[in-house]
Image (cartoon, rainbow, N blue to C red; front, side, top):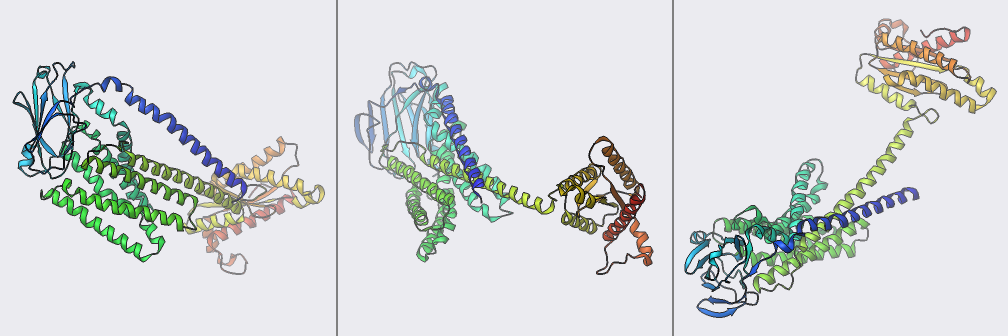
Amino acid sequence: MNTLQLTRKNILRAVWFLYASISILICLPQFDHMISKDFDSVSHYLPLNDGWEVTVNNTVTRDVSLEDFRFRNIRSNAQIMMQRTLPETFGMVEPVLRMHIRHTAVEIFIDGISVFSYGLDRISENKSVGSGFQFINFPNDYAGKTIQIRFYPSENKVFTKLDPIRIYEWENVYRALMTENRVPFFFGTFLVIFGLATICITVFALAFSTKFIRLLCVSLFALCMGLWTICYYKTIQVFSIPLYSVSFLEYLGLYLAPISLFLYIREDVAKLRRRFIKRLYQVLMAALIVCVPAMFILHGLDITHLPVTLKYMQLLIICCLLYFITIVLMNLLTGKNLGKMSRIFLVGMLIIGACVGYDLAAYILNRYTGNIALSLKGLTCVGIMIFIFILIASFYIDLTRKMMQETERNSLIKSAYTDELTQLHNRRFCVEYMRKLETEKAPDYAIFCFDVNNLKTMNDTFGHTVGDVLIRNAAAVIAETFEANGIVARVGGDEFIAVLGHCNAEQAAALAEEFRANLDWRNRETSEEPISIACGYATAPEIAVLKADAGKEPPHGGAPQTDIEKIYQLADDRMYENKKAIKAAAAPCP
């Protein structure tokens, strides 16, 4: 690649990067403002976090703040009850109580009267209850009354805290949920759409090439993590999906993501060529392939639900994540022949690994200790978005490179098949085109042969520069008449040929007359040296005459001529007859 091409390539990269960066900087704030511009009004709520009396397994704690209250992991037979007096007024239109539950059934009583229940029927059938937000209508006449909430855990050791409880206005309750979680909602939704669309494309692409397998893995991973994100942050609840279905989709995305990521690094493991690394990969992949389906089967049969197996899956994910990061680092450190984009890919994979590790740590801390110190949301999606950005940039750069190579290739092909002086086709192209007609058994075609008269005299008298002008002018007249009906080529110094597909004898005769008219008009209308061109033609049906007259086989040695070569020879012979006639006196094209 020369310096000019390299400079052009770098300029294209810089322009694309600048365009993408500006687009992101402009669009993302606008999108965020569109979602959050009414945040102050829609996020107004009445907190019910203080003044609770909480009973856990007959242990009573009074004046509890839900933000600070913690207890040890409880079992499924635990009894949890909390109560307090509601404020004297809610100050809201159509108030709604929003509470977050974690794999528990719940009953709510107002002054001893049951006003809401969820999940008791599923617990009685030993089914999963799910985790997410409940939105309960709370009429204004509940104000000043005593609220009592009873929890019935469906699984062992699934939470260590009671989440904050708030009262919103009905029209704002879902908007507040979406606005609070707008970042994971945006990135999660994008990844789901991107994953689904790319999977559909790559599934068909794999039928033609296996090189798309890694793109399929990235698409599956993006889909899994996008699905996990919108389910974990509960933004999917705007579609009124049952909590147990939301939780199932959350676990589905979380459990399947490591498999797609492990399939992606298969080539990177092979590049290291280390037996222990390869064996460890096989062990971890086998564990994923065996354990993940087994966990879902146990869940489907209601033997052991996914929340119970989560801690084992988290341990496996941590092992896989450490292995993944190790493989990426080893490839970065030992890959001597890695290109720039390969190194960027590996750095992108490291970013994904770090983001997944952060979200996993935040999830474990929040679930088992109630600690929300790692409060940044949806970091895995950000990491995947960065990696997808790298993929798109790589695709664009690769596409640009291939387009430049294709342009260079086409230029070389054109040079190989084009006459430099006239920019018509050359003899090589003409021969290949004639072979194509012969192979296709074309029933009707015509071949015209031309010879520019007096070229040697012009060259000897006025020089080759003037002779070249004569050649170009002759080529222009021939191309003007015949190029629209077939191909025109320069096959020698002063020799040209026109090969016309789908041309019968009548059409050939008409074109011969048109050529003579165009040549006469050109000689009348210009002050340059007149052009004299000898012309002869023959058509495909005449081959039957040649075959019938066996004694008139053209006296040429070597291999027997093909039919199209015989037609060409006949047209060439007629052209020379016309050339002789022109020298004696002007004569029409036969």
